[in-house]
Length: 209
Image 1 (cartoon, one colour):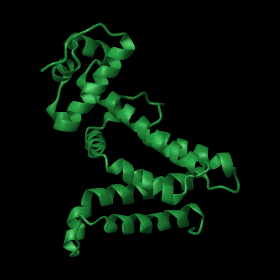
Image 2: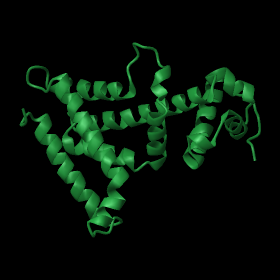
Image 3: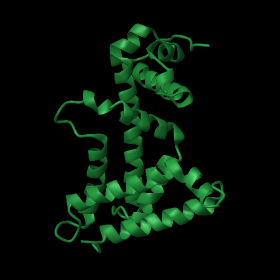
Image 4: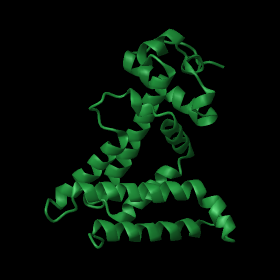
């Protein structure tokens, strides 16, 4: 049943549309929804959704951007807990927490396949660039140059972390089963996280050329 329509401020309406879209996308995937379905779930008119977001593609982009900001805040919180330094162990914990959110992984993967960033302004930073900015800010706050790693090393660290974490999340069940392990046993995830953290810690510490 669609939600009953009621008076909302513009900010409330926009937030509730995003909430409805996020929930629908989580249940049905981005390809299984649409502007009219989102409008019904949010209890607003199709025209209002179009007024705020224009197209369904733009709405999905807005949902993804809000989710990305929430994930960046997880990184910031981890950095605050670690004294502003994104230690490798903390970084992998955050990445695995993010990847445990299957809703987000499905949305992120869909966005990559559909190149959602192609509607952004040419000079606007990408979501990955913003994540690197957050990490670099934390590093610089306690390890200013030349003591700390440069931007290039931080970018490579993020690429290594994302590749390792996303690859494991996508293939873990098949690979662990193929190796003769029970993929539902949590110690395998713990062991992999420890190994990945060790590699990242060595790299961010400058022990590789």
